[in-house]
Length: 170
Image (cartoon, rainbow, N blue to C red; front, side, top):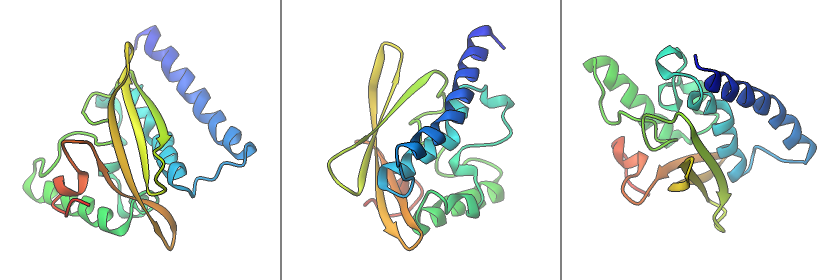
């Protein structure tokens, strides 16, 4: 592991350890549209600084139902679980072969900015690399469920996670 990766990993671990305390101190609630998206990136951002081939813990799309329900609504959870079952049965990738949280498979060194859009049910995530800090935008569509705000879809101008997984585009 290079010194640069060790430094980045150390900073992310330190930031990750401080983030919840800082947000709680400021009265931040994870049960809000922006809060659930921030929690998603907080919980899975380690994948951007640790070599994926050496990480046994996968991204959101590889999680069991009980973990998915912390972040996504029942419709999206059902589609993700169906895709997981398809991959197991076929022994190969079924509908998606990249991480939709990062709009790609190589998230090393990526920056993420999470912003409100002016709509209560949508959050924008701006992705970038170094000199291109906001080169891509994801839109998270959210719904209020009985367990709180949950992600209903992730989309760009060219794709929708629900559509890629076989559900209807919303």
